[in-house]
Every structure is written in structure tokens, then in C-alpha cells.
Image (cartoon, rainbow, N blue to C red; front, side, top):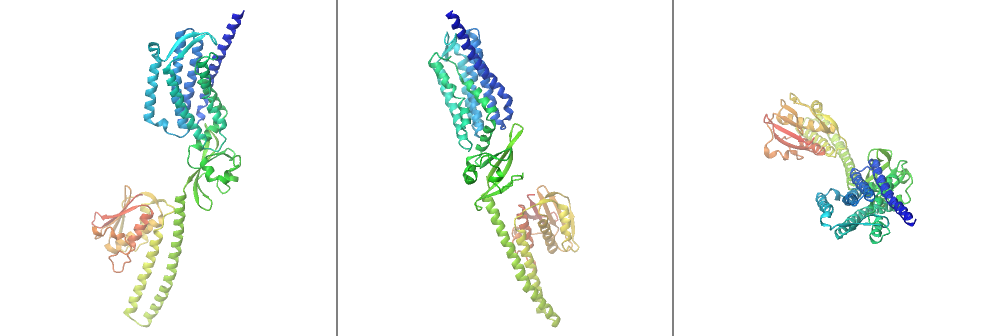
Length: 541
């Protein structure tokens, strides 16, 4: 009866092996049903390949253990060896994508990997011919089965495979080290994929276990834990660790759930013990309810961050929000310094306007009284000089205002702007022609000033009967006249402050035009019009 008990014991043990790999097959394939919950497409692609390969690998072990005959058993084992080797590539693809690296996109690496894979597969499938990869026999312990005795080539490939897999483990460990959350459970889950190597060694060194690769069991446990226990944590670590900018992850209740090392370094005092606290308690000055980006100052304005809020999802379900703090210190400090300069300029122009205009007004009034009392050409000349000074002050103030950066623009129709500006200028018998229309972003007030100065310039230099043409161009617009034009050697200098060909001109009109164009980030050039006059071309709209 002893042999009967032994046979039953062997059958039970074989059943346990078959059951273990069958469960591994079902778990890995079953986990694929949740693969859509992985939000990053490249991580999802790598994980799907890993699970698919591991499922086929585990199923091939079931076939190997149950196959009736050496030939079929070896066939299943060969399939397992080929697919198992492929899972190394899938593992590296997954870990590279998950940790935000580009190794999986490198074409050279991919070509080398595919080439090496095909060479090893060729050696494996042709083993019946050369017998260098493994030899086959039938053994009775721990139960009767086909035994594969692996050769040097197999162990060389296994050594390289485990080395490459180790690179994947290192990438994951490095990513886990970049975040604040306790990642020990994740490390344990990932470590389970490598634990079966102990069973591989025991099976090779003794008869206690079947000499077979046990890695599919580890992947099955990893897949189950990944999708059913720690999916949110894995995704949080990927999102927080992939950025060099400070990142804070909030859960669905707006409580701090996770943050990366960069956030810890910047907000060390705020984030100590912050996990689980409401974000409004940790960052009370941050408008978390606003969807738009906001600027957040750290300290006494030493650092500035643009805070971007995006939903954090698992599959199609929103489970929190991601706060990304992008360092805009240089940009914001420059903007604030520019604002201070503009304020100083406003105060200066206001002072100039007041302090110069008051005495001018007094002097003009006195001279007008003097004209009534005594008729003198000297008084008339003095009045003309004062009027010219008043005009220069007005032009200088306008030049200062229009040279400041533009804060806001709005869609502006060229034809409407041109006709409104024309009405504001003393055009005498001049004619305005608008050959077309287009809409572009501009500051309407400053565009009006630009057009008014061009129209005034045309009337003053081309005569009272000049025809001014406003026309849209492919990347802007142009203003032309049929006057005498501007000589080529003067076309660069006409935009300089003080340049004028008129004895009573201030020389600021075209300087204002250039300043308005620059404030809009437009370019401006002068060329000859079709009628031989001046044509001012603006581009960049």
C-alpha cells in the first residue's frame, strides 16, 4: 500500500504545482481587465505587455506539467522560455515609462534588444539540433515529470536577464525615493516579482522543488496587489516623482495626500505633518477653488511659483487634484520691477506735466495781456514759442505713455479703427481709402494713437489733398500715401525722437508710432508706396 500512498502524494504535489501556475495565469490575465485605470499610456502599454507575457508564461508551465509525453512537454517549456525572455523587455519598458525615462523610446536600444531577443530565441528553438541550451530527461522526484537540465547558454542568458531586470528595480527604487509617501508597501509589492529567484535556485540545487522558472508567480502577486490594493499609490508616486517642479497631490476631499522631494524642499515648514490635512489649512493664501493658474509667493517674495491645478484620475474617475508649482521667479520679479518702473514713469510724467504746464500757462496768459496792451512782433514770437513748448510736452508725455508694455489686448477691426482715427485728425481735404478689413489683437487706444500720428504725418508732409490708404496684409497691415515719400537713406532715422523736416514740427509723431508698434511686439518698416509716397508696413499681428 506504500506505493499507492506515494503515488497519491505525488499526484497531490503535482496538483499543487499545476494549481499555483493556473491561479497565476488567471490573476495576470484577470488584471488586464483593469489596465485602463492606468492613466499614462506608455506605462499602461508596458504593464499590459508584462502581464500578457507573464500570463502566457504561467500557462505554458501548466501545459509543461500536464502534457502527456516528452515532446509536448518540451514544446510547452520552449514557449515558456521564449515568452519569459520577452517579459524582460516588457518589464524594462514598464519601469522606464513609469519612472519618466526615455529608455523605452530609444530606437537604438530597441533595435539591439529585438536583435538579441531573436538570436536567443533561435538558439532556444534549435536546441533539439545542437543541445547546447538544455538537455531533457524524466525524473520521479518530487513527482514524475520531464526534467530540463539547463546548460551554460541558459544560465548566461538568465544572468543577463536578471541584470537587466535589476536595472528596472533600480529605476523604481530611485523613483520611490523621490516622493514623501511611505513607499515600503510598494517596494514589497515590486520585490515580490523578484522573490521567485529563490525558488529557482532551490529547484536547481536540490530535488525539493521542480527545476522550473517561478517568476510568473511573483508577477501574478504583483499584478493583484498593483490593481486591487495600491493602484492609487502607484499612480501618485508616478505623478509626483516624474516632475522636477514641486508637486502636491490632493485627494478627493482636498486633503494633502502626497508630495515629491522638490515640494518638501521648498515648503518644508508647511508640509511637515501635512499629509491628511486640508489644503486650505496648509496653503490658506492659495485660491484652490479657481481653475485658472495663480501666482504663489514664497517667503518675502524671494521665490514665485505659477500653480497649475489638474484633475488626478484613476481610469475615468476623478480621485483628486494635482498641484504643480512652476518656478517663475525671474519672470515675476522682472514683471514687478517693470511695474515699479512704470509707476515711477507715471509719477514723473505727471510731475513734468504739472510743473511745466503751470508756468507755461502763466507765461502765455501774461503775453496775451501784453498783446492787448502793445502790438509787438516779439510778443507774437514768444507766444508761438510757448505754443510749440506745449505741443512738445504733450508729445513727450504721449511718447512716454505709449512706450510702456501692454497689459491687455482685444480683437480689433482694422477698418473700424482706421475710420475712427481719421475722424480725430484735422485732415482738411485729404482722402482716406480702406481697401480691406482684418481683425487682430491690439490695444485699441494705442492703435488709435498710431494711426492718428500716421494720418497727421501724411497731411503735414504730403499736403492737404493727400490720399491715405490703409490696407491689410498677410501678417499685418500697411498705411500708405501719395505724397513725396521718404528718401531711402532716411527711412531708418524717421522713427527717432526729434527727427523732423518741418520747422514747426516736434519730431515725435513717428517715434510714437514706433513705440506703439514695439509695445505690441510688431515690426515696422518704411518703403515706397505704389503712388511714389511713403508706405509704413506693420507685421507680427
